[in-house]
Length: 551
Ligand SMILES: *[C@@H]1O[C@H](CO)[C@@H](O)[C@H](O)[C@H]1NC(C)=O
Ligand SMILES: *[C@@H]1O[C@H](CO)[C@@H](O)[C@H](O)[C@H]1NC(C)=O
Image (cartoon, rainbow, N blue to C red; front, side, top):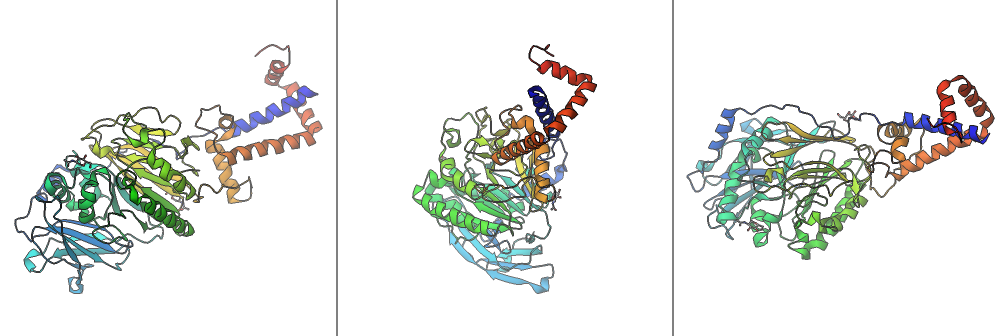
């Protein structure tokens, strides 16, 4: 009797395990060799002409734009050698409807002996979403009129896909700048995010390098909003070059040294752009930033149905697995992680992108050094990315395996300069691709599927309900990623850290056993009939019986 009871439980467990076997998922970090559009040689050559320094001291150069206080405002900046006023003329295609906006001119003297001194700043407000604008910048005289550029204001979220280019650690000596610029113009990026370490350094050679960099990227930065956060290479002289040469949303200009962080909404995304350098260079500002982050994230969560995605970017990573004992993220308790991880977890930040380490790494959803799962379906913690590969020319960070459990993918090969392409499709799906500059091949792909955007401290409560959507999602979850095998820890240590799922599985097993117990007579006679008839069952039976032959 006891033996038969055991058989029925084993049978049920086997059934459960078979139904729960993980299947090939499209949401894993698959790699593929998709070939993107190749850049023509002539175009690369033409780009170099942009680097020529203009002769007239009042001729605007280094034109770059960034999102203003909202994604419907655009700030235009440029530099001139001599003093001039700051004017932008713009229209939407009909020159007779020309509009004019005036702004400020500031002088940058500090560590800028060899750089252009006069910086210009004009904000165009209340622009039409998804509208293309043409503009020229100028000073007093008609002779100072720049060439005409255009930009498109990001659409509001109404079923549009939003695409962004993301990288850090880009300097004037990065090998593939021309490729990068061509890629930015070929595709429909709504903004470019440069996550710190800009030009190496903006202030180097008394400002010459900053000028050189801004001329190098002008072809793109005059057309696509160029969004930044400071890295360690921007910290010298109290960030003076960074604060003057760039202007970011919801900040005065020049940006104040005690508030180099901001947030901006684009479509269904709330971008949080924070400074990790406060923890290392100006820690008197740490508290102010943490307070601001908390306030901003609370607000973002209160508007989560309108903007489900929260994506945070800061220069230094919380997680890395590199052979660099001096790196904060290599330490057992990194400063950045200690200061920010709990907050970002509690506020349900979906994705954290950083740079600084010159390599590419992707983690599983991770909290307190533990991967909550090893896929990206309904993550229970933030996902971390390091995209510092454009700095490979300057230094290569070698990956090690210290990341073990939470490290999902790593690429540290010298020469493989690459950038990130972030695409947000809708409230539940985003994709991330890392593409190699040399040939535009995809090095890594990740899909995040998150239907439950929420502070991760709030449990994802759902019990199987075959009638409802939640029940269906749960079933998907089981077949894709969990299942009994992983639950029992048979598939490696990545699995089975999702307590809700564990509880749910336990609950199911309990219910099934209970049902089995209630109807045990029927079940047992059923099992007996099968076992009498079927050869394999007899073998199992023989194998399980004490004293029986081992199979
Ligand atoms: C660039 O900045 C870094 C970090 O502040 C500093 O260590 C380095 O000396 C600077 N390089 C130059 C050439 O100024
Ligand atoms: C969101 O986008 C993904 C990827 O394009 C698609 O598979 C999914 O069906 C979309 N979901 C909704 C609700 O539109």
